[in-house]
Amino acid sequence: MDETLEQLKQAGIHYLKSKNGIILEIIEERVEQVSEMDRQIDKLLSEPERGFIVLECPKSILSQLTSTKEKMQVVGERVIYTKDLSDTVLDSVPTYEVWSPTEAKSVSFLAEVMNKSINETEKFLATMRAELPLQMNNMFTVLIMNHDPVGVVFPHIEPNTVNQGRIFWIGIHPKFIGRGLGKGLHRIGLYRLQHDFKAVSYLGATKIDNEPMRKILSSNGCTEKTAVISLESVM
Image 1 (spheres, rainbow, N blue to C red):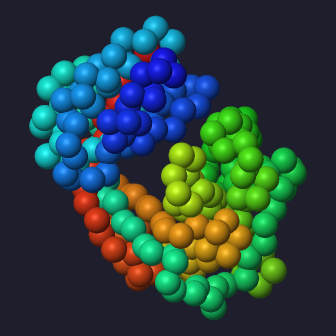
Image 2 (image 1 turned 90 degrees about the horizontal axis):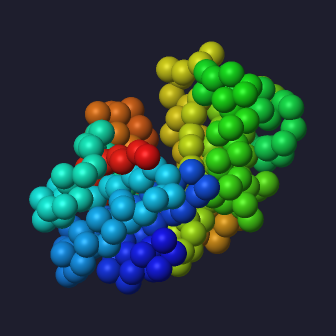
């Protein structure tokens, strides 16, 4: 399977592999090796121990992935946003703290923000650690207001990229939703990507119908790049 993933990379597909599966990305609308991409994705889908596979690509590219679109199911559409972090100094962010992801207070707070059980939250954190083991302990970033935690954001550098910053997950505690705090929380993520993770660019994505998040991305200076179709194939 590693050989197939290397072939996908050479064909222009970014991938992230975890113990549960593989995420594939084609962001650019103009690529040169579409037929080779289709062949290698088809090969990957035939691997016996591949786990789940997620693919995101522009609609124009998907129409050319003949074999892939027959074997994977469309589950949604997202909008990609980008921001150059190399020529703008971010400052004036709200108060925040970096928590340890292993402390009980961290897991408990995140469970409340995500509206999940402690067990489900621990599984989420375990997945994050498996995918980003070298960054995990520095990612748990909490927005603080009047000495209270109100939201959490997980900035990181995407593996196999040239210092491309991303946000693994972001959310406001239910008690504070509707107060316009999302922009500040997202800006904290961008600030930490630039200052602490040394990211030179940022790539973000949100569901096409998530207007509040799209407004946050735009208001923080991110540029809409393209829309991508999300597909899944599960063992």
